[in-house]
Image (cartoon, rainbow over all chains, first blue to last red; front, top):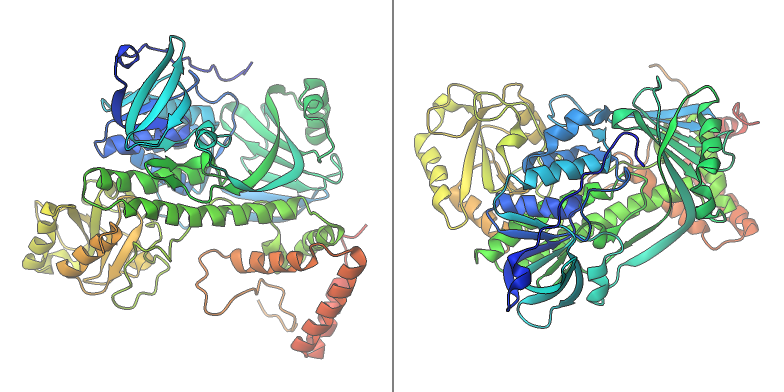
Length: 554
Length: 81
């Protein structure tokens, strides 16, 4: 039905496992080949883990679904090898405009300071992301995807988890050491294991209409509270790739979703919004309600829950897929260390600890946006409308206006994996924060973040690399041979890096500024590009201690 | 920009002792606390709560020049139909 996109069909291939007399065993099975399940497989593949992915379907997302991808999600995807394609195909945008009764009341600019590889946001239909991820998975020998493989039963009562899988050729069984659940908001696996995701259902309906049109509107997010063409409700207009535009209409709880989905009812709404002279074709439509909820615990022994299966938010703020990608970013390296026997299983509890905090923050922010967009009482509506009225004149009201707080990262300040600061730092890049990017020169990468990830690393800052003490460098480099290898990346302001040292020049001084880095400062960076420790004076003992802590070996 | 008016209209929500990682956060924290205070109240009860709240905040501000300007700013509302 799509005018601009043809869904690929991935062939079901019968696996030798289906003829095996005994259930075949796989170290890791991922259930669900959406962005989060495929992200998990790609991340584990980069760590050298063999992964089997099962999906009940044989194609990518039908309809555009998630369209807003945040800077952090793009950075994770870049680490997994899909980020640049996303940016190339997607629509980069920074400006959001908010209208109240057709008048512009405020606008925000998400454009971060210069000196980051990835933009603040891009819009791209979810099917493109999934297609890129499938193609990327095909580049790995250690990922196997089985399409049309639906998990219909799971037994976690013994050490190895046992699952039954339904295929066009009948049912077969598999066992695994670790099961990663990424089968979406209505997770079957979650239900089969008797677990629940609990929270709040919002009594409102929204219509998504994707239309194809050649329009001169800029690639901005236009949110309209109580517009004249859709009284008492809100609308959203946002551009995607291929001249597809996302229109979102708040409908109210009393509307019949089946009626609203009919083109003859959608088209007048679109005309009312865009005017009669705009030519468009309807691409895809969906009516949705939403919930904000999460599982109390994202882990049940060897079963790990990720993405919408673990937590669900309202769509305002693009905190769904973006936070799911941050789940797998957090999980993959921990699972690898546990599988290798280099870290205790409690490291996986830190996955829960950290991502449950993030889920709570995402739920809180998206609930607040929802309460602002769809006030639940007269008083709440009065405050909302007063805020919008005052926005025309006053800065503070513009800042209070909440049309969606767009996905950002949770700073994991309370994580048990963090080490306390050693010395004083004047930067918000604390232990538990994601690294900030910066341009670099003179080494293997043009961007700081491209030199980090997938392993523990020390970012060691020196003013003049020529003056750097050789013995210190040698001691730092020796940590490469530790049980959990620690790679040192020397960041320098001036001088010439000697051969055989992984060194990058802080060419614009942005690293010094953003991290408050001085000569001799060091930062321990986790494999998911989060800071775990920072110190003003560097010693291998302190770094090794911080790595032990960051891998839950207290 | 020179500004001889005493009323602060730039965003001013903050919480001492807390590191603020996101600029929108303190304002949103306030807004939710306010709306939560009204949850489960009738419209009449909400009006009373608002009246008490305005009086408490007015006394806290104290400065009549600020209060007059705030009342005037809230009264004149060019956007209102």
